[in-house]
Image (cartoon, rainbow, N blue to C red; front, side, top):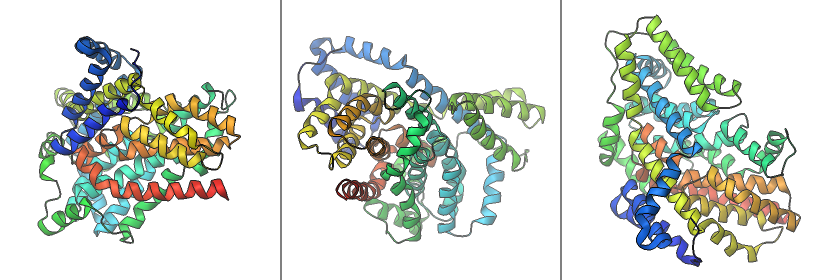
Length: 456
């Protein structure tokens, strides 16, 4: 669908989403309302037909299908680990090693670094593993979500042997930035310039150590958890109930191996199959089911009922993500990314280019809730600008990846935010608002870094 020339009006649907989200604290209704307004602007009285066309296009998109399958079956795998008691065994072992709030949070950070192969795996697995331990030390779920999210996408960006490295390396080749077979090499050369990812990861231990105090609404969340022991925010009761819908059987005691081995299998299988996380999760889920049945930990019916129940726990976050994909499709048709690019072009110089790319592309990623999708749209434009200005291409790629990471990190309806919130037991909006001050600190340092690189 082609958009009329709307100018600044193209941003109105997304602004409506943010206004409604802050007012209602409900992401799905906000996303749907913004999408409907955008469809009205595009189709007028025929917006219902436009909605049908857009939703069908989104639901048949390969990337959306990938997200649904990966997240749903990751929920199934986590459900099996909970039902068999494997998660309980892992938590019990970690509890012997963790003796304070700080050590619990450092452990979360370390697990996140280990799960570098994919940010979805990182958020879902680490969040599920650390919920009960963080509760023991009266750590708010918002603080847990911040640590998990600040390690998930950023660490998957700066360690190239991940789904991010595979995806973006392929895009660099497709857009002529790298020679055939050299996409990952060019990606690796850009890693030192992915400043936001580095700063976000390294800021976590600074926050844990207390050198950077609790800021904004995180302060209230930490006070609630410490003084009352209520670690789960009241608004997230429904999410916590979904996470607790699967309970471990009391007559099982599988030991630590049934948790650790599937996680290791998932990491190495994903890497072995060219960083294809969907293949990795299929293989891991299949091997885990065979092991559970072979060791007679669960019977056939209980095993597959748990697979279905685990998938169902992901339905609400998946609904938010599908609504976000619909909004992204509408924003693309309205020309929102092009609007932002056009508005910053007059400001461009070789020295300012990295900082302006980070700010403008970060804004697009933040407003659309998209990180990979924005990179697909923006990369040809950014590379053309870099070539025209004679800028360092690896620096430009690093700034663009930093912008994608920032958008993923900051937006309340991005996939990373939604999945982290689900895994840790808080709402996407609560997670986004409590994390936002730290995101802005990292973003400010990033801008200063790019300006320093550009002018020095």
